[in-house]
Length: 377
Image (tube, rainbow, N blue to C red; front, side, top):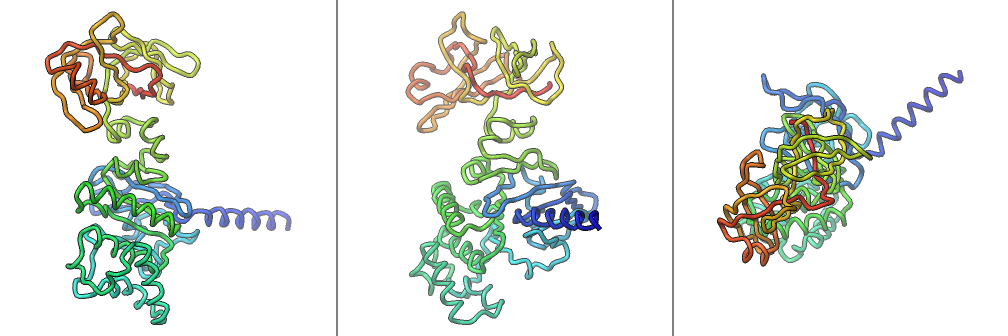
């Protein structure tokens, strides 16, 4: 009897723990004919969290989103929403809000009718529908646009209507499939800020899909980087950028220079790596690397220092090009001590524009204390 009671207690505790997560993927796999779209994907998403699925085209991120929505069924594994397995639950019963890439607004309906559509399908009282539509229009700053048709709205306004339609049903989870891809750069930036504010006010768990690294890093509580149907790394934007766990994450997220070095030894949790004439201290990773092995060092452009050629340089090179970026200049330097033959350094505008003209010989160093990454070559 005691064993049975204990088992029931453990089972109840496990179910309670599952309910702590808004969405959970457990060893999910999906194939389309011979193509493996997802392979053994496991991920837990907390309530109210804004998580981004980031990766190149074909990595499986949109497939994962469609599985949550119920448009596809997993071949194996389980998808849980609020602790309940929803593999066989139809889309309309999942209480999921979806914003499509093309917004999918009904062109013949007004803004108010577009937003109210999901509520009417749920047969809510007319007064309740009017109240909810009014509240969500105020939230997305479109209170005086309820009688307009989609064609009378700008791209950003259409996007807000699509967000409002997804939120008005009080979804358990909000799914966003590259919603900013059709917007110009300035509008995209402003809408990113507005979306994050709306998401925080509403408190809805949000799964966002994008291939845009800057978008993922600026919007998310956490980022799940995907490649070839698998999740490579999950972490905060800072962790993903500063502490990539494999070569793909290090090269896909942000710009990186890949330098070929040699491992000299380990001490105090760090590795000493020689590159050019210099030595670098690199946080030791779980990657098995033997002493004297050849390694690849991933260094961000802002972690490089450019100077007049001198004794303190790690290596030297010749300035090949400047790319003006407003508050900084991307400086491209040709050097034999880089795998690609060309380094990218990111420098303040005044310094790069006047001191280092194209063709100038320069010294190159890695800024001391930079958090760089190392992987087996």
